[in-house]
Amino acid sequence: MTLGSTLTPLTSTVWWAHTSDAADRLLRLLDGTERARNDRFRHQADRDRHLLGRAMARLALARLAQCPPEEVTFDLVCRSCEEKARAGADPGEREPHGKPVPSGPAGGWEVSVSHSGEWVVLAVAEGAPVGVDVERVSAARDLDGLVGYTLADAERSVWDALPPSERTAAFFGYWARKEALLKATGLGLSGGLRRVAVSPPHAEARLVSWSGGGGPEAAWLTDLDRGADYRAALAVLTDRPVRTVVRTHGDTVALLRS
Ligand SMILES: CC(C)(COP(=O)(O)OP(=O)(O)OC[C@H]1O[C@@H](n2cnc3c(N)ncnc32)[C@H](O)[C@@H]1OP(=O)(O)O)[C@@H](O)C(=O)NCCC(=O)NCCS
Ligand SMILES: [Zn+2]
Image (cartoon, rainbow, N blue to C red):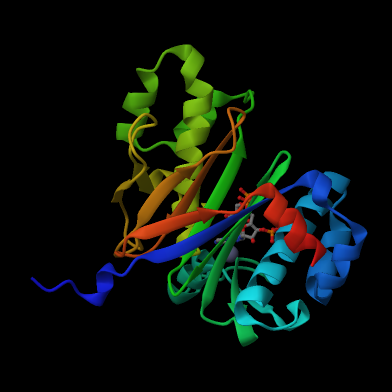
């Protein structure tokens, strides 16, 4: 039997920053466009989360590419807008947005960033697209409406059968798994959460189906643990086995001070 190189494991590294790690000295790591965006947030908490995501990404990539963090650059890729443009539709005048794809010395690495509540998460992998999502479990004013917008029919049946006390957390669990996949592809939420169906909350995370085209050829999915108040998931678009390395918060603090 020949085991092809496709079975060589791929490593995805996950870094978690807490909003209390935000510090003004990190602002020097943002480029001009990021700095302008950061200035435009009205709430300090949004500024901190955005700053930590970009700073962590630059510092982690600089280590991997062995270059100064200032030399790490990102191209922003929104596959939803690319699809619209290919179909002849005008995606409209928008500021640059989308998935940050490392370029320059860090080209070839892939990253994804997500933030919710007190946590910011970064996932990094080499040679395969990654998507990460964290969601704070919070009482939604219109949970039924959100469920209708988010869950595919099969997911909805499972969710409806859950005891009411489990429904809120289960909803955010579904959301995190689905959005991690959509972010890995670069489609983002505009890709349509209902297009993507994942396994039920109590089952191991995996992509079940992708309707309407545009899905990945292969996808690996796992939940990440951020305690009872959060749900988080990591997707890697590969057919290779994936090893996840979750760095400690102490590692992140040291990274942000480096
Ligand atoms: C950004 C998006 C992925 C979800 O955002 P969210 O749930 O609010 O936020 P998260 O914290 O999980 O993720 C935000 C990060 O995703 C990344 N991101 C943005 N667009 C992305 C995309 N298309 N694919 C993958 N990642 C994306 C960015 O790094 C962003 O972090 P930053 O804003 O600090 O730089 C996006 O799909 C979204 O909400 N879009 C709203 C619809 C929209 O604006 N559409 C118009 C453009 S098509
Ligand atoms: Zn777009």
